[in-house]
Image (cartoon, rainbow, N blue to C red):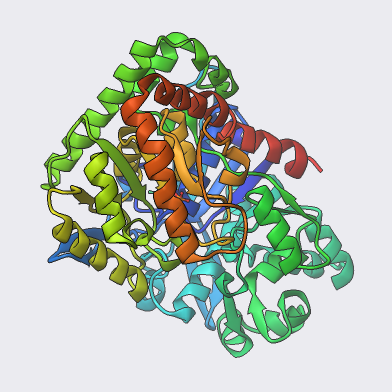
Length: 558
Ligand SMILES: *Cc1c(COP(=O)(O)O)cnc(C)c1O
């Protein structure tokens, strides 16, 4: 008998999940967080099962041609990473029966006392299905609104049925963002079909659901018109009176998930506050995100921590003892990580960066609110600073294929790189993903983040940098409001307040010129102290072990 089926489990649903670098099941931060959630759950031997989409064609592979993003198919081979399951379930979508199959991938661990945890990848590419339906699990965040809604039906409703068909006993359903919210409809339908009144069924479902929201602006929430919802979902929209649960005007996935969960959280303290004002009447808790320590430490830092902080992998809180790592070894590990990054840049055909030059890293989804152009907003000032203190910049990031503004940012960054030439060497690493990400966060000297407040719900890349002793220079938003100790773990750009591009730009240059760069070039010991602070204060705390332990205790067990 499969021991996975003996214990009741938490089912963790996410549209995307970064499981292995070669698996195209993620696009960015949300997926990386979901993958880290599963990896920490495995390290801590938690009873959990993940549910996500197979996304056989992935998100997309990015190359840069003539300074512009080009998107390529990113088809991958599931049989290299997962085992096809014999179970199949049926879901009615757009009036057609769609068969949903599954693959099982096991998430392993590098820690003692760990236990691999399963993730089920949903797949509609089955010969029984209509040609159009076979593509429903192909492209992550692809297609139009209808495609998206159909995908969410596969994830939510198909996912619940698949878990049941496989024999899992599920104690809690955790929705990582609103994409999975339709799972609540399936749970409701089951209860009503078993004879419960709708109101009683609503309470029953709430007791089994946990929802994590990630989007601090109303426009960011998935919404669908009711005629489209009815066309895709069928009579259940009316039978369960969906408008009463999910919004009168439109089917709002966030509203549905909020309404049917008895435990809801935002992903940082500020984000929870913002969410409370956005959703009056709901108690929104805060569990600040974290990153998976082993996954995000560079090769050199893994060795360093193994030697000086035994058991850090299972208990990353122990990284507070990084205080005792000899200065020479900490510097050497950073140099090794920097060399590894420079090696990657050379392989990708970019400019050669210099080991001794101060390196600023900025890598994230290329989208307007992250303000990738802020560092270059006053070229004269930037050049004047670079004359005094040499700098170089490593950039990376994908823009969603339909995000024209994001693509324009990529093009502009390339124009500036050309214009600046050797005065400020700039390299853009194509196809940002977890592999390039690990080299970037550990190989630069400073991690820059310039989001428009309060749109950075949490942000996690700065946590990855901190674990590797790379301090952040960041706008006070998301996790940085909790992680920033000025001059100890890194630095703030400006104050906590409403966003203002001009003020933020000036604050960024001031801090670079007057505080960060002089410390790096003129006070190596002082710089090393900040590197240590990043590890002992941020690395020890902002990890996904703490995060999943909190979910376990505060969300899953009530
Ligand atoms: C960590 C990570 C992100 C999220 O970083 P943010 O700081 O939230 O922007 C996105 N993409 C990849 C590949 C990552 O590794």
